Image (cartoon, rainbow, N blue to C red; front, side):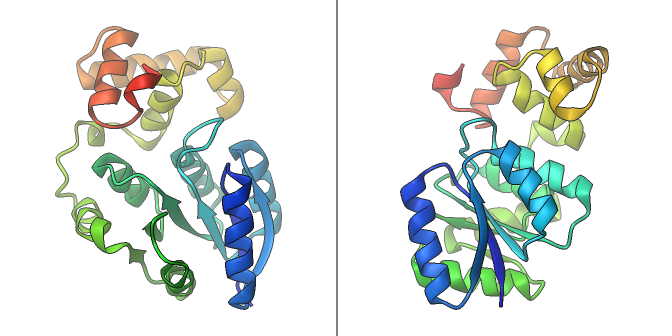
Length: 212
């Protein structure tokens, strides 16, 4: 029986997914609406598949992907989101997502996608498949591609308004180390202050415009 963990901030969506998956013979072994709880439970329970929304209240689901990559778990992550932004698709692919499915998909496709990734293969919704293939082959023209995974993670946290101390506490780094990463990533992107970093993040779809 496939063991699934749901990381989604809307309770009604979690309830609907749980019903669909259980009717399909899968076991939902946990659910959360934030990265902190989700990461701890995923590491402890090691599900076969995590259904991951990118738009979480505390941070982007991309941060969870980065943190799970460091854990080296056998768990496969299937992104389930409303976002068709090229940057989100490329970043999720680079961070090791086994699939990327849009929330407008049918229950049948979601169940099929879970079955596919459990078998060690990838599944992408039709409208994002081409972009995912480009990302996997390195064909996506993305200025943020020059950043390391850690630098991209810290960039997302900086533009979300987190302080160096808060980022350091979250990532087990000293504030000074966070500042070093921040200076390095800004230099790579050719920006010299937070306002311009936020503008770059908005332009590339890293964050929504109303977050800036």
